[in-house]
Length: 221
Image (cartoon, rainbow, N blue to C red):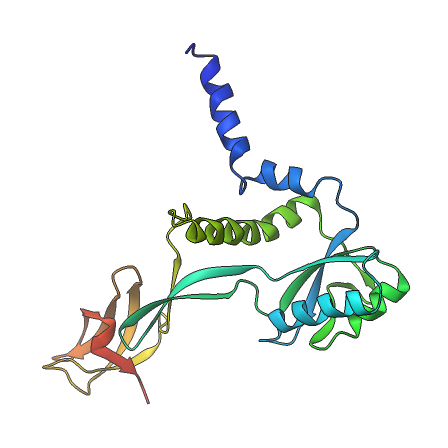
């Protein structure tokens, strides 16, 4: 293969990746309507998607309201020293809808249970730009690809999930490990991947950093 063919092969490989910006752009091309962002009550994102999908069918608005998405992500949550892979809403309090913005469609979306309004200037919602749509829908496509891969027993091919922890830098904790049981400390650094914390505690009148595992501390009362 000549050197001038290498970039072409790389470009072809990138184009075949369904999660690449170009692939998502092609997928969106020609779809009717524009994408808008909805404000929802916290914790109601998936319910809003379900409610709106039902309403757009029962109220014969499928020519104006086409698609509702709630981007999700996989994260490792670490609680009580235990790490568990969970799926959570990527943008709490928001959902995406592709629609033609006309009065009846606006009213049906606006009045859907759990929706508090559109993101925009008052009564006039602002449609997302193409780069914004691609950025917000990439997690949706990644989740679809990962689900399909798991169904076929194949590796998901996705990045290592984000690790979410219950601690924050600057938070006060109480040590539970010998010989410092019951002593107060302040978190100065977090190593989520290895489930380790660096805490600052006072020893012999001096602030001293100590490296501990998540299971060796607890939140201060």
